[in-house]
Amino acid sequence: MVDSTALRAAFARRLSAMYGTEVPAYTTLVEVAQDVNREVLERAGADAERLGSIERVTAERHGAIRVGTPAEMAQVARVFGAMGMYPVGYYDLREAASSSVPVVSTAFRPVEEAELAANPFRVFTSMLVTGDRRFFDEDLERRLEEFLGARRLFPPRLLELAGRAEAEGGLDDRAAEEFLTLATRAFELSREPVSRGWYAELERVSSVAADIGGVPSTHVNHLTPRVLDIDALYERMAERGITMIDAIQGPPRWDGPDLLLRQTSFRALAEPRLFREDDGRVVSDDLRVRFGEVEARGIAVTPAGRALYDELTAELEAALAGRRVTAEERNAVAAKLWEGQVPRTEAELIGGDLAYFTFHTTGARPGSAPPADLSTLLAEGWVTARPIVYEDFLPRSAAGIFQSNLTSDGSKDVTRAGAEFGAEALAEVLGRPLHDPYELYASTRAASLARVREELGLARLDS
Ligand code: OOG
Ligand code: NI
Image (cartoon, rainbow, N blue to C red):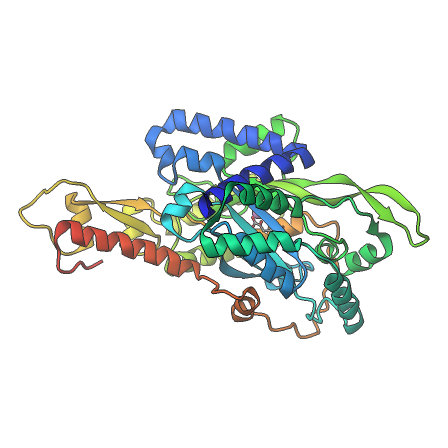
């Protein structure tokens, strides 16, 4: 029996091998990330593994895919459900992006601590909101729905195997092989000709809409390895002749704890594609829709920590408004803001309830009886804290990633009302609960506190 954990790990490996043949620069990125990770491990020792074992980090990837309809989204949920990946978080890129990005998104990922440790593979998945009049008028919506309704992203056999895997917790060897082959194939770049007129019409509205609704299948849009020192990687990529976008998104480089998520990417590369012209001729041309991205993950923050992050981001924007600055200058201004307002130690992050940690007994008994409050247990050395890694995404960075790779800004009629499409509507489409990331982090923390309480024989524990 190949269980859902093994299916997920195998799928991540296969997707990585497939993407490497499709986008060779991805392979360079993975090589450089691994070099950097090895160096950080040598330099920092066990500290390098504070946010995940080197095995986890080396295998760690996130992918991104984009689909067109609620029915397609529901099928994606079934395929990923087979691999122990569940929808977490709601992202509205229609709002987060200044250019035309008519999608709402979630991320499919494992939700349990042990599953994340075994393989945290996650896929950021976006769905078109075809009913949003800021982007699509009634006529275009109708033709888009017709086009999307006629295509089939996933073969019935894949969905059948996915259903069986989810119901039974895995598949036998032969079925697993078939499932993995079909699942990987479903995310390959299609070789079918793209209809030129249709693609161009959608592209005038939004490059993202064209990438989703202008072609008969879906594809991996990027696959992102994790790196332990993203600043070192950024420089190293330039040396290897790959031009990155001019900034690292997310928190600045500074000398306090790593929080949330820092990401950078290189521009979409032109890939050969076949086009069918209006007169029926099939010609070969190219499209620039896919790219490479790399990320460094930090500690998950609480709602208070997130509010602080958002506030600092807004202050940074205000401070830089109307100025043309280099990425270096921007980082310097941001780092200064952080130094003034973000605690420099993990202990202070815990004290201010700004970030999530798990707590563990150390085995030491530095007194006759353990005190019943967490801060004293930590201060006296009964208990130690380990940071919980941030497993999710940032809407602004995601919007930045979308935007930096669009061929044009498209058009968005802001005078029209947008379509309501919130987290509840998305959960309904998915046909399963949409997990709240904060609840997941909080429950991991709570489980660790319950273990501490039990191990120390405490009737209650104030935290
Ligand atoms: C997804 C962009 C979001 C990230 O890392 O923030 C994303 C896309 O381009 O489809 O992957
Ligand atoms: Ni990404």
